[in-house]
Length: 546
Image 1 (cartoon, rainbow, N blue to C red):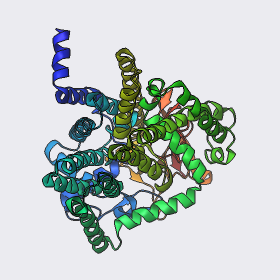
Image 2: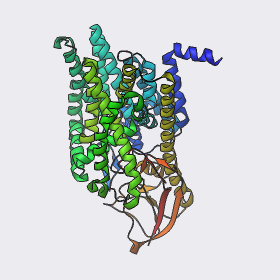
Image 3: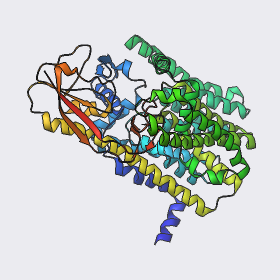
Image 4: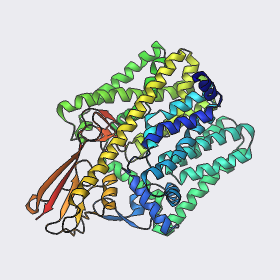
């Protein structure tokens, strides 16, 4: 029976991949909304009322209310996707996450289709992509990152095939997919120079392909004009200005950003570390010694970097520094894979993969407002393909070793996803506890903080504190989570600590806690995408105003 099942799965790779994606993500469909999920959901509510004005409302996201177009840094396609989903299935967690299985499936199928042109084991490349931690965790959100990657990967597939076959329809469709990717996340505009470089390396005449890259450029220019007319400013330019302002405010040096980006790349793309012993010969592994020494020195002796993370001081830094060194070396491996592949093959495909990886790394580390896993995500399919190309080139890994590495990759990616989901559940439960205990008190129940805590507190009828226009009164309550943003504990002269509520979350591995150094969604919270260590519970302090 099992032998027949194995043969069927091998004979039907697409069905196999779909089943694997569903098996990996279905257990997490009930994940509570967290981090920036609420922004996309609120814009989707707006779209159902005013389809032509997705950002025409105010939101409490900061010290006071701001227009939504100032808060969000992404174009609205994902919000329209959510609005359509909610119109069909409703606004619940399971309903929205179920619909977001579609882009996850498309990414994996697209990776398989693309890998057929780059290596002999495309199924293996797709499975490695699936069990890359950044992909699996990102697929449990309702943010724009995985939908953008779905458009991204299929645009490359159609462009590669259209260029090889002189298929004008495929090239035109690829141009349309790039435009959709841009309207999902601005970073997708990088596909235009990436595919132009690939086409030039293929020595194809400009007249055969250049006009199709005008499609996404035209759409982006039109979007600039429309948003300028609707909101008084170009939203793309505003996002770029926000990134520049944020980088100057937070003050990380380029060296610090580089170290953090390497650590994020190594952790988010964990298979590159797991497969490393079979990717490199002993002499090549020795060359990493110099890079590892530089990374270790930068991590251990860079006091300016660690001064920023005030919650991690003294002896608590040592285990975190060790983890950072290991992950940063993994990031070096990812970049070295792309460089080695380009050096050995010297063709258009190796150039495409190298520019894909290097460009994403440069953006994540030096251009974005903060280093985060979501900016590393576009690298995942390219790195997975590079891993398989390297294994095929070296011919040093036995099938049993490959299976072992896949099993370890899958186990770790699922474990990390479970940890991220556990954190989101703890946040929702903390909001539930505040509501259940204090919803019947006299006066308004107020709260501070954002992300999932804000979403569920507002669902329960509590109101966010507006620091510029406070309306708090004597006898009213304010709930303040310990791990959040834009927090300002009330003056003890005019308030009394009434209660401290604690909800256990992940115990020893987390993606999001400044006390442990984990900053999966923003390195401002921690220099690593995830961290091992004792994770404190979710804490909410409740104050009564005098």
